[in-house]
Image (cartoon, rainbow, N blue to C red; front, side):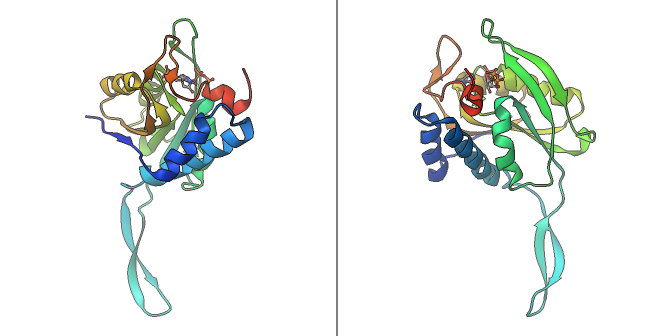
Length: 209
Ligand code: PRP
Ligand code: URA
């Protein structure tokens, strides 16, 4: 069964407050999303495997740990997921980046896929799918299906803000995918927006309306 991790780190919660604030402009919004993505990436990599290598310190020879070379694939859901990419890459510079393009139809709230491009060695990589918002869950569910259809075996999903409805929907459809959230909000409104949320993540990130 999927595990759900809600990060309660004070730095993440502090920055999230200013991300939510309607008075935060595009430049600061973008910087804060980037910073929170880095902090979340630190937490999400806790279970990365290590191996011993032999090194020599100025004092003696010793064994010490390094990451055991798991290949990572980072996949933002376009558009808003792009805002989290650089922040994660700061901690995982060797990760390859795929893209899944989806937009949510404003009438039906169903995601429409328009672009998928993944690294060629999909089966060998551990994937982290990123998107600031998990609302109805439709976009996350379809993005994860797009990866699985192309051979991905290990997938984590990471977002800033989630609605309980979306989390339950992803868990039901993808019980093998762990979900990492900076904050679990109250509910969705009649337009499928997260309450209190942060508004439209793509518009706030890119300054569109
Ligand atoms: C937003 C957000 C998610 C999706 C979440 O994208 O970035 O991808 O909505 O909603 P859901 O959980 O109900 O599917 P949007 O469709 O607005 O596209 P955009 O990033 O291009 O603005
Ligand atoms: N997409 C967003 O950008 N914000 C929401 O609150 C819900 C979906």
